[in-house]
Each structure stands twice: as C-alpha cells, then as structure tokens.
Length: 223
Ligand SMILES: *Cc1c(COP(=O)(O)O)cnc(C)c1O
Image (cartoon, rainbow, N blue to C red; front, side, top):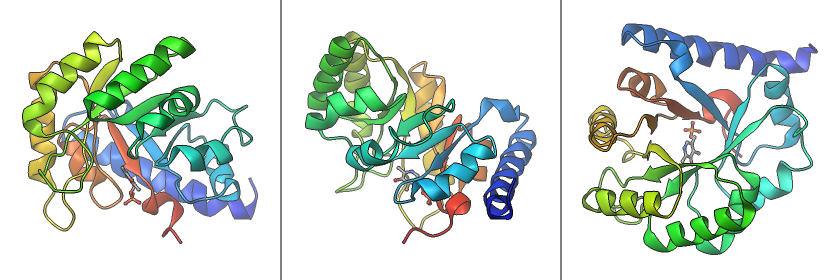
C-alpha cells in the first residue's frame, strides 16, 4: 500500500473500530452493522484507496453524479452501491440500473416508478422506506402517520422493503429519533435500520442501526 493510501485506510480502521466498540456496548455483533462510505462529491482518486483498504459499500445521493463516477470506476471490484439521497421519479430507471440499494423510498408516485423500473429491468435493489422522523418541512421521507400505507404499497408493488431510513433534525440530540425509528421498524417487522452519520453513528449503532452512512469522517470535509 502506498503512503497516499494510508490515511484513508487508517480512517476506515478507526471508524470500523468505533462501530465495533459501540456494538459491543449494546451487546451486538459488529458484523450486524454495514458501514456505507458516503462518497458524494468525492472523486475516484479519493474513493480508490478505500476500496483498496477493503471497503465494499458506498453511498451517493445523486443519481447523475453516481452515473458519471461509478460505472467507469472500480466496478470490477465487489462494490455495493447505495442511493441515500432523494430520488425523482424520472430517475427511477437509472437508479434501479446502477444501485444495489435505495434508501429514499417515500411516496406513492416514486413507488410506482421504481416498481415499473424493477419490472422492466428484472432487477430488485433492496429498498428502505425513508421516514421524516422529525416531522420537518422540506425534508425527504414520508410522514410517520403515512408509513403503514406507504409500506403496504411498496410491498404490494413488489419492492423488497427491508427496512427504514431517516435523517434526524440537525443540531438536536438524535437518540430519541433513532429510538423512534427502531420502534417503527420493529412494529412493522422490518429488520434493517439505516441511521447514523459521521457525528452520531455510534449512538445509532447502540440504538439498533444495521446500516450507518458515514461521509465526512472517512473522506474529510466536502468541498
Ligand atoms: C451526506 C449524507 C450522509 C453522510 O453525512 P456525513 O455527516 O458526511 O457523514 C449520510 N446520509 C445522507 C442521506 C447524506 O446525504
């Protein structure tokens, strides 16, 4: 491994160790938690060292950016790509083609578009229903009250709905929101929980996260 690769490998080892520690505090096994390296805005040259260090799961939040970056890049390696940002219905086809998991399923029109794209492609990426857990204006995710109907629609349409995803409100203690999301997932028989980012992934792991989405702590500040 070259010197240039070391910082990324070290950051990855540090985050992995912190996840393992948080898991052990909660009596969980570290391998129950998938670390998704959020590589939005970062170039191939920054991503390659993490892949070389063994990182498998990466997340992007814009279909177009990911399409430009990933197909040419590094897909000979066993990389798993997650879409974590809001998805427009008119990009459903591209999203289904490129991603292995979609974390932002949150409304009837999008479920219809994604189901149609999955049927056409014969490919069914894992889906998370995004919940607007802080009931904020201008935030992606379905209202908590709408979750049962959205989930039923997704299941009826053949989307593999494996779990819930949320981004809690900024600048407030996230733990109550993580706990609420975990409770909702349990109530609906969903095993996967996509929650926790650079500032709070350890809290999320202690409260049951199965997928943490870490950008800044792995790549440094976005430009
Ligand atoms: C950017 C982003 C992240 C990563 O955030 P960091 O604070 O950089 O770790 C996680 N989830 C979503 C949905 C994002 O858009």
